Image 1 (cartoon, rainbow, N blue to C red):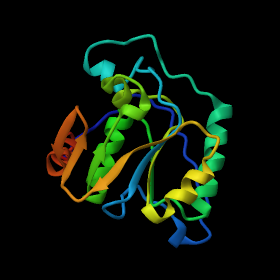
Image 2 (spheres, one colour):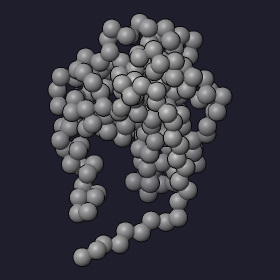
Image 3 (cartoon, helix red, strand yellow):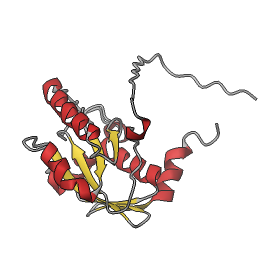
Length: 194
């Protein structure tokens, strides 16, 4: 039997770009255990109207504010790092913030992640679920570390937060240890009947 799934009216904005060489495209999946994990962009206490607050029945008034000048600066640096093939994988953060992005990366690559949130200087729940705009979660091969960090020299929102692991767990120091298969089951369970 057909099933009708309705969604409220939503603004959808799409963009398309030309990639001259497909081998230079960057996917969200980490490529190798031992790769380094960086969070690019500022993570602030901006959980107002977030998925995290909604889950707790709270709206909050510290909604994310976009700094277009700082984001443009980040995107130009990221574009240069991408052109120079210094980025192994990348994912823009959105709903659910860093927590959701880490889970998506672990699921996509089938690799564990060992993460330390202390460089973000926020309480763990705020660091994981802030929906500050403009951020990118990337992995970088160890041999590209020096060139990658040089590319972002002078940009103080380039945070090394961990590495791709040889395990099958998303491990966030002092917060969480979750099996990737359990994360994938939870991620896909919403639409399991469709």
